[in-house]
Every structure is written in structure tokens, then in C-alpha cells.
Image 1 (cartoon, rainbow, N blue to C red):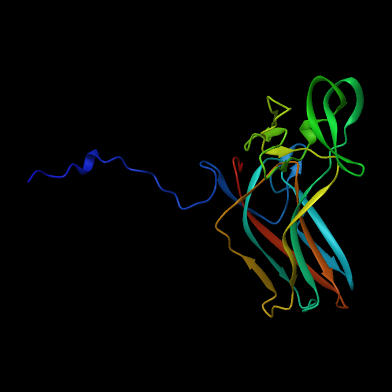
Image 2: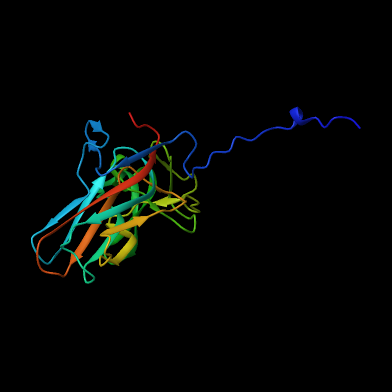
Length: 232
């Protein structure tokens, strides 16, 4: 019987990680300093309370990242009536009026709010896409696509029949991933261990919010595990 040609079988390289290939682990309790970019040189994920109050802190990364998991930990000043939340804030874009020369037109989504429809230099408004935070269009009928590594926007080719993955709005959008988790755990710890990752654009922000109903002082900190293209 001829020997089975094992060497001829192509081998797949398998890596037990949910990140984009080539992206590296980044664990931090801080956002970035944005200009110039200093990774981990920005705002801390930390809140200090003197008594009952609701507080939040936002941190931002200077490059696109993939959020994986993290932990929050607090002192004895918290109890079951205190609530922990974590989410992503996508700040609004503010287009300027440039009739007939702009890179977008405004499409109403109700009330005073709009999404940006790309225009080829003949639009009613101009939006600075370098500062925009893209919102995922779950129906894939968005007006823009976005490069996952650089965060750069590309307008769809056919704005009459848009098939992009993202949109840009002139209203803040806050998406909660963890909402109002009780802080009565005797270990004083909330630990998340996910498998998947969520991509976060560099113009979006992570928000840690605590609604403290109990009296007395207290302090809470947190860390995140991310993946990012560059870590040095």
C-alpha cells in the first residue's frame, strides 16, 4: 500500500484570537493622547464620588481598535442600588452650509436631525469626514464605507441606491454594551470575558458611567483589552 502523502496536504495557520490578522493585544486603563498620539497617554477610566450622583468618563483612542473585554473594580463605597454601565459614544458631525459647493446634502431622519448624503462638490453642506464618527447601517444601505484600519471614509458610488455599511449623522449616538449592572458583588468586581470583538472607529469614544444611589464616598476604575494595528 503506498504511503499517504502527508507532506502534500496544505496546512492552515490557526490562531486562537478574534482580532484582525496582524493586530496586537492592547490592555489599558487609559485612552490615548490624541495630538500627537500617545497610546495610553490620555484620560483614565476612573470615577471618584463624594456621595450619591451619576457620573461618566469618556476615553478615546487615536487609532481604530477592536474591543474585546475588560473589568471594572471598586471600593467598599458601593452597593446593590448602585449601577454600572459601559457603552460607545459616536459624537455628532456638524456640517457647515456651503450651498452648491458642499460634499453632502442633508437627509432628514425626523425632527431637526439628519444623515449626510454624499455630493460631488455640489451639495448644500460640507462635513469634515476626518472628524466624523461612522454609525453602522444594519441594512447595508448606508452612504459610506470605512477602512477598518485607517478609519478613512469612502462615499458609495451610487447615492441613489446606497449600499454602504455606515452613515454619518448630526446627532450624538450612544450605544450601551453593558447597562445598569448592580454593583452589589461582594468581590467588588465586574469581569467580562467575551470571544468576539467589536470594531471601534478612532472618532468614537468609550464611556464608563456609574449611577451611585448610595451615600458616602466611593471610587471605581476599569481596564479594557483591545486589539490595535500599532502598539508602539
